[in-house]
Image (cartoon, rainbow, N blue to C red; front, side, top):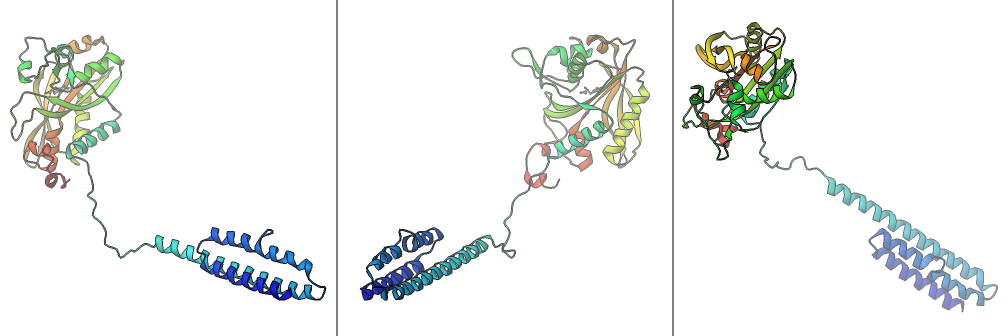
Length: 331
Ligand code: DAH
């Protein structure tokens, strides 16, 4: 009896050890523990046969059973430690950062020179207390011309050869209609800067494009005078070019301003015409229901392409629209 139980224990130990050593995951290992050493496990099963043993045999077999149990517990513990270490090592290996590995090239995007020019302009005017405003690119005759004091037979309409839509609307020829739209919705005082795309039936060449960009300025308040316009333009030019360049205001004509002027900047030895401006015409004030006896204001408008070309020394406006990466990467 003793002999057969002892043999059973030994073969259990062998089978269990083989299973433990062959097991390579922690879950499986725990299942083996239950299978061999659990309450209803194989060792318990064998020990049930001990009841039939004599009083002398029992302690001997009990001792052997304990040895087997302890040995198996040790085997399980040892295997568990090994598996846990292997798991950690595998994780470390997977997370190893090879700092000597060759990098892969990722092309870096950047702002288009037109956008960065607009951003700069907006930054400057926001810094001066202006609010950014926008308006639609498809406009009506009223906002693009009529409300800006450009009547139907006015020669200034020829200056701005217009794309008309079939429904009678048009593609705005300048950002000035944003002045009207904003004033209709807001009461003075007003300080806005309005960037946007504009359209003209121009033949494309190195300095002309049928689609280009403008920025519009408008300030309305009590007591605004030409000197405020001048100071504002001077502050803007200084920040835009990074230095206080010589500026000259030349008398000019725009239907929506009176008096009107064009601004020239001396840049690298040459006078450059950079913008139109003036005091808001009383007729424009009346069109939006402002009392020109109470409020005055100034407005200005300029082309973004022109500034971008001057500042970056770009010789052909078409480069700004061709999306040639060899060109764009320079900015
Ligand atoms: N709208 C004019 C143009 O496109 C530019 C301009 C001139 C805007 C004088 C103004 C201004 O606001 O006061 O040529």
